[in-house]
Image (tube, helix red, strand yellow):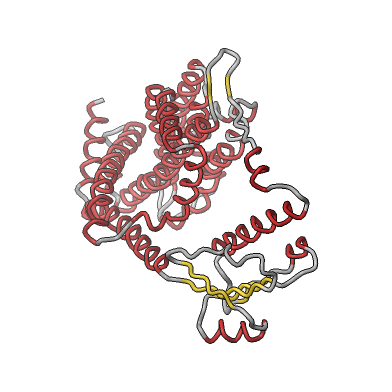
Length: 437
């Protein structure tokens, strides 16, 4: 085990002392925050544009329906023909012309309203205009039928079904959303970590192989220890970089927008408007209280422990495969033929998680894929927030780490032969023969 410790230390120090590693550790968060700040700045500029829309209402039903906002102004045209209104709107360089014709029946307006513009209008703007027209038309229709629209609106009841298990535990749609968000974020983080640092391990093996340093090292160290040490050392370096990224991102996201003077909330103005409408309908205090309660109801300790176990086990499993590929080839360009079989289970896990677990987290497909070691780190992490028995979680973890040990043994046999072979692109048939040596 002394050799293993030395190899882990060597791999870790080689990675964290590398100039490129140090530069990217500090430069990546700066680039990400810079991009985010730039997008927020551009969004604020875009939202500051005042759009003027001319309205020609021949029906006379919408005189007071369109209200001006900070970014949207309406100009009502009167006693103008359609051709004259078009000319006025175009010469004024307005955003567009909204034409509402006079019809014999109110329902004919459904396909008669036209918006004229030089370029395609914003879907958000058109959605707001259509909603305003639809609301007014429905009120007119109710009046024509002799029905008081205000009375109808007052009588409308909104149904929010309560969710509860047979054992009396209350749940909610909001809780399901929070669980799904946690599971999706955990699966995505693992997916990105494997892609980024798995490739780092593979490149490290290829570099040592091409430099012939490995020929000296392997003479005194068993291949499985060398492979395991390389995987663990690079993993620790990756975790170090990941932690530094999180800390720097948190600091920069707080400082940079304030220094630059950019309102980062501008890029989410539309989403906030939707949320505000929902809060106004249900009461902001009630929703905030409900969110806090649902977060407290989540099995936080269980989620954190299992996240760490599946995250570590899943990465180690795939990292050993990346190392095996690196030992079998002479250059990074030769790895393409072997990458697809490794990435396919990972991609499949993401798709199963987002399209199956969301619909039925306790269904047969979800359960089966949460035990398969190549998909369980993603699928099981997405299932756990919805309530998975502890024995199933432990069984899945045991299978995952057992498979990792088997994969390391499998990868070490490839590593032992492939690390000393040069100048020839191996095939799957040749790799299968190496396993027999």
